[in-house]
Image (cartoon, rainbow, N blue to C red):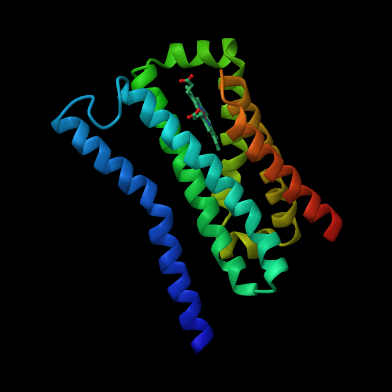
Length: 198
Ligand code: HEM
């Protein structure tokens, strides 16, 4: 009974924590609408695209870190938060794509096709999202039951998803590589941990 209460409580706290960046962004947008260029800088569209992209990759890494954390701290309940982190990462990535379509392309689909072919960092970003989509769709317990062992196999798509997202970030970074370096090291450490455990 107490364990169940702890799980419900930690899920609620986690849900609120993961919603914080979105809430903060909504608040900044409302300030921006009232007083242009005060909250999101000279190019609010770019600031929104970047903010959502960064949170997508951070939450993706967080979701990927949950299994190792669960093993290190020997706390099976930590694993119950993985799905939420993964789904949130997907939601941020979808919003990131929507913001890009809205602010950069004004929903001109031919320009999207052009970007997809000509700008390799966009191609790689799309590949990352493509890998994440089946993971988000099949993240429920029902799909886990239906797919059985194939569920685990399918969820290995998280590796290329993170790798593509990191390449996407690396290719569009013009200066200040510290962040992409930090995320890449974290990814390598987490992959190493899983590999050693196996
Ligand atoms: C359909 C797929 C995607 C498209 C079209 C796309 C497009 C973009 C664009 C246009 C930018 C800004 C580039 C600039 O202004 O120079 C960007 C930045 C970024 N994107 Fe994506 N992206 C996609 C998927 C993803 C995914 C799946 C992730 C992470 C999981 C991601 C993470 C990022 C990050 C971290 C940034 C850089 C933010 C910063 O430097 O502050 N993107 N993306």
